[in-house]
Image (cartoon, rainbow, N blue to C red; front, top):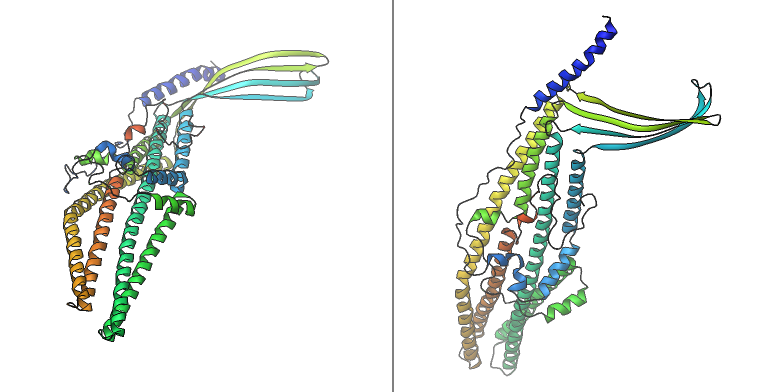
Length: 497
């Protein structure tokens, strides 16, 4: 038997051996790291939990508990205008497009081809026109799960991007709510400062008249005048703080400033109830509602899938090819047509030597996984600390509230009594000013404490996830579309539809 015949007989045997080797390698199991890592979550909160309220109200407490139509509208405008929310929406659209691109790697690829030419045909010994049209198809079998792992990583990152979109919305809502609360309490402090300035002005007027009548020393009248000027300066400074808060709300909401001022002036005083919402007693459940923590968790799963994809790159790849077409030849008024088709070749790619590139890619993917896992653990510890701190502040403000109210009421009565004694000539102006300063400080402290309590509620809302539900963003099984946000959805990308 001659050599060409031997080679011709050996080709099917070699193909069968290659396929058998590939099938044997397909039984190899890739070992990517676990897609989920344990988080350092305590079994119970150390700070006292607020009593009353509802866990379900966490996502919309400003709608149901504050009964203030201005704040929800400001939050909606700010979320629609926020560059952070817009950036998160764009990143979500990009992630969804990546899911569609990764899904296509598991499907056959079909290309069409059309060409035409005219020239001298040696077989026909004449000038001829030729045309060919055909369809070529190729399909790479995902023997070791490379494409599947890449698709899983894309789905996990899409879920992470959607969670980050929720986190951006929660952050904007918390910032607007805090500024809105600051404005209301700033106005109350401004009212206290203006009332104090008016009172000191009346004292200065009476002192000046008494000095002119010769009943009051010039030093006492000067002290009253200086106290009045100091009070007016404090009132002006407090007014400036309120103006700056209005500017911040304008920047956040994008509203016209005169219109916003009218709405703020028409708004009812912000008097939140004692309990706005409740927090689950189990820290694990609370942390499960944090969108940023959920995004970090999904990044860990995506990094795990990428390790599997990098490992699969080190194994053979099998691709099936095929084509079908039709050709035409025309010369001298005569024409011929023919059909062509082929199945194959079966292309088997065996990675033999790459200078350590694929192994380095596996190491790099493993390092990215470790970094994602470390970030997740750190974020979990930070989330626990944020909730604990918010709970501690909330408990502290609740315990201080009654004492602060009693102190303010007592200092107010003391000032009124001292003022009556001063009017009757039984107390000095120094005593009056000392009582006034104490009363003013207690009034300011009471308003600041109420704002601190509201800030603690807002911080707890943000630390507890802002009503996020991870069921809305869990990555679906392979082949199913990625879930969209149930409300206020960012623009859906065409690639993901």
